[in-house]
Length: 135
Image 1 (cartoon, rainbow, N blue to C red):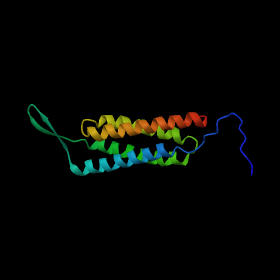
Image 2: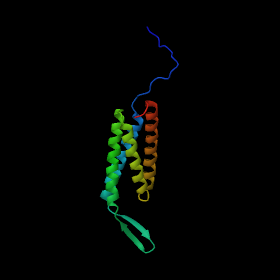
Image 3: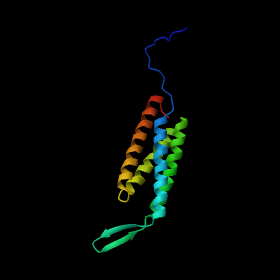
Image 4: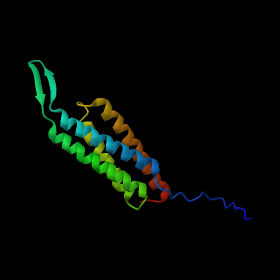
């Protein structure tokens, strides 16, 4: 039986970023489901001094649906661990954060939670890129 030799160097860490990819897939699917629900529900109502006004945010919801799909696909791509997948996933997650912040007045709790999970996934992907030697 052979024993491992201690060379004094850290083991090579080139594994796949499974947690980050899983988080991105989850937030992407949450965005897609939320956008679908918002499309089916109709216009938002805004209470102002003069009364109650309907606000149509259909364009923003379609943008939300598109970015949610892109984030879910980027998360699946990050799960493969291929070169460049982390960069694409980080860019898609950053775009999704921007869209979440635009939708903040209409769904504040979900927007804050999804933004926090996307930021955590970006941090994990950046840490993975640094330990893997770039990407």
